[in-house]
Length: 210
Ligand SMILES: C[S@@+](CC[C@H](N)C(=O)[O-])C[C@H]1O[C@@H](n2cnc3c(N)ncnc32)[C@H](O)[C@@H]1O
Image (cartoon, rainbow, N blue to C red; front, side):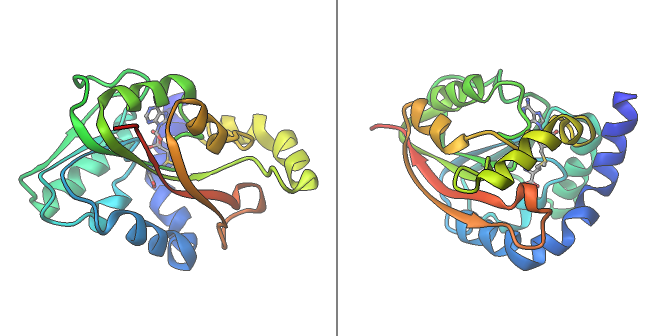
């Protein structure tokens, strides 16, 4: 049953996001990823939507994705692009198979909602980042400033998680990032075109102390 849900999610992910990508996600991805440099790790890369937004002259780009159906599409996109410095790795973000301080930047877009443990994931991101390195974040979050929407997020979360690959609606990710030790520079935004329960978003970056 889980594998059917995973298969369907991977198959229809790009199509289901198209409207939101056009209305806001695409320009946010461009703004957040377009000027990155150095060695970059992306967690939960999914079907590889971010791939076309990275600069071509990155020193190294590692795209990690634990779900095999998503990863297949990701690998196909990487192969089509033919970029030598891009590598696809199959792993969850709670257990990153990289040594300490091996990346300048870690990218997480719409992933911290779905990982089993955001705390463990953030600890792993901290570990693999070099001192002064940065975590680039684009995540939908719990509606802290809208009690009515927060109530709907709580009500719908069990079903949403079941159908949406463990995607949580109520995570207060900005606080988790700060609690993990990062110095966040995050702004709040609204994901226009998405269902109301996933509209509250944080985006920006959070730095590991030098
Ligand atoms: C909503 S999709 C986002 C995909 C992509 N990052 C994007 O911006 O479109 C969530 C992704 O997180 C991945 N994921 C789920 N659990 C994960 C985990 N524990 N570690 C890393 N990635 C995970 C899913 O397989 C899926 O590809």
